[in-house]
Length: 294
Image (tube, rainbow, N blue to C red; front, side, top):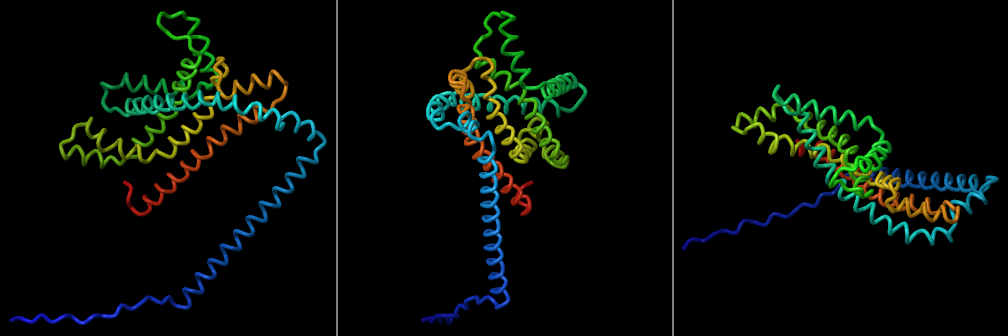
């Protein structure tokens, strides 16, 4: 009969930080508390100074009645929110179309070989033209120019035409973002993929584009934030969105508080997307610093 000896139990030693480390941590916490207190105090002082500077100006009473009336704000808010639903739908539809068309243009501009020169030239001309054309002019040309052509089967809906103008302009900007991401991928990635037997198309699809898209997520989110704000420009075509709803109320009562309400609503929508962009950027920077992102 074989006896197995039980190994002796080794006591676990608890880690005790040194006095120097404890002093360093106390100093760091004290410095953080001091910095927070200074920031809060300076913010409070700045806010108080601005409050008295604005409210003490000679025209503040008239400005408050014209731009910051609670009565007109309560009246305008429901109609502005109702019109905002159109802006959100435009953001969803136009954002999807912009990403798809922008990626297609970026791929067309990065095609290699002389046989693809006409495609590269057309994509370059499109990008240069719509990046240089002001968005407001593009909207006016599409919204009022397309119906004037009286083309059979072409819609005259100002919402669709305004959305098309947004897609035309923003796809040019997004295409440059995607192209920068594609060109940032090191050529060795393509060479390694081709050496494994992948074709040019599969190399682009499975190796280059995944890396390129990950790298350009923050600037893409910034473009979507700008698109969200610019959906309000479709109001020039007569579409009743948040901006046009505010304009109707303001023109009826000659009070501009509805414009302020519409602006604050857009700001409330933009801030979460901006913070999301900052979080994604910081996360990608941390992963890249740790070597976890190619």
